[in-house]
Length: 310
Image (cartoon, rainbow, N blue to C red):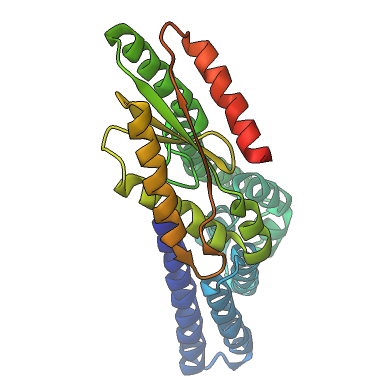
């Protein structure tokens, strides 16, 4: 997920830098063509585009501010070019709604496009052209279909994704579903089942004092150390914000205690820059013979609450 966000940020920065270069090239072309009165605006907008790229590249999230700067540059440039057209230019009038949908979320972009219809048609002398008005409205509707479908696919992916959005562990719903299956299998095959409860008391503190990067590093370190010291078929899931369950199939009490000891030692040896050694609280629960899955799940939830309040 972080790689996708990094790639998206890099793509935006490259697009903004390309826009700044295009504005410089446009100013140079106006100079060569002798349109000296029109050189000032693209010359002034080029540094603004560069500023938007630097904001998007920064450590803090200024994506919304950089998008508004780019949108402002695009609107000003289009507003300058539209009155210079001898005839209504569908190409120039069609650029604002597409640019708005690319830079703003779907809801605000649609609202801005609808409210700005009179302005663009007035600048393009197209208020009396019913075909141009219908074309503009059609473009607004059709251009919004792509981000609408992207939002639908993203919502579907989030609803069906088994992993937690912040770390490689299973999300809560998937964790409980898999735990139910493991309990039924253990009871049916008369096998042992152990669950290690993990609580990270530093998680909230790391996010509040050091920011989301420290919080993410803490989650990633936990998942990495657990995956290194467990079997491939063991399940790590996130029960709540700072609580995790490690489901160990066909594992005895001694085996679960050994896992707890290895995890505690490994996490204490893991030193993070902001928070230092990773502090964790561990507990262990075993599925009792003839115990129902619902009873075992309730016992795990109660033990997790007690572990967090310790």
